[in-house]
Picture 1 (tube, one colour):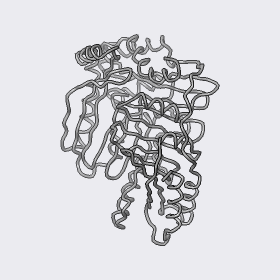
Picture 2 (cartoon, helix red, strand yellow):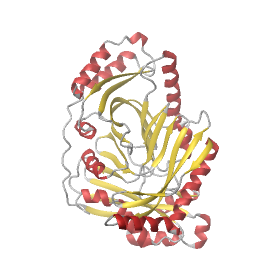
Picture 3 (cartoon, one colour):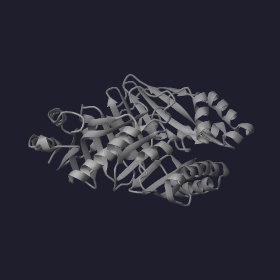
Picture 4 (cartoon, helix red, strand yellow):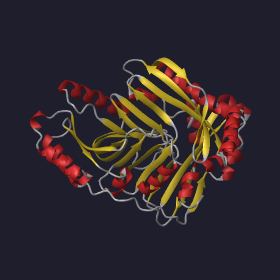
Length: 447
């Protein structure tokens, strides 16, 4: 069944609902067929539009259209998650507790991006889910916050607005003007300042970032750009959100914030970077040198030690894996996984209140690192280096929103950061920033 037919089938099911017995969140689903979630999403006009695909090939991918409810704080989100879980359990509803999608900014105390806010999660109005080739189209209704007839009409309107999937348009090479903030000389001054011995005693690691703004008369569709980028960025989390027309966030992040299944949690320290080689032998040699390098080892150590400290009060068991190197298209990173068994009743609100911004994107100690970043950086990080993903009562998974781009009608803003520790050299770190945005630059014909 094509998506249009599936939407009509859902609309017929909605018309048959007994509104007198509806309560909590009601979810209806039908199977459907779709070639490409991003191609479907790009064709739609309902806002918001959101995409989420975890990095494991077997994991479910999601395309979200519209919102049944929105939350601008973690407290409000957690209250709603607990309330909906209770309602579902009491009513013994087969649909189970709903999933919510969204994210948080890097620093709630700093200037953000217009239209994004510090925190926003939504309960989707329409959700297209694909896992191992099988697709379902779902519609959510909220009967707690509005009259049932109004909620039914809103759901019917969203389904009626769905249009057929279309192939993604090509990503043409354009003529872009590039502006880096900070400039290269400014970056060199920053690194010189933070690596002074007396400063390193107080702040052993701070992650400084750069915004690269590309401007043109016209830029590609964010969903088409994400589709091309995703095809080249295996072993990454792929995400995108467009809260309103005119601006979108897309990304292909290699870094997991956490995955929670019940009380079992997995997070990771991803820090320490080197380039890719020209062949397997060079990759292996570079990976070995990366693991042996004192500066990169210190950078990764700063991350996992702080993660362990943050998780210790929340967990009854912690285990850390061995360091290994992950290969991406343009760079290699050191990764250490951390497994935790959480104490009972630990919530996503607590985890999201403690873990981000991680030391891999902020620094350590956190307060001093954030203060230094606010002092030096003139660009707004917004949701860059924050968190993005899916949360639910039974399980949740979020990525650190790095390797991302903010796309408007006439500009593409790319973000990259580098951990500055003892031994950091400004030129090396600048080249690392370039390597981290090389993938998307090549898609635009600038690589």
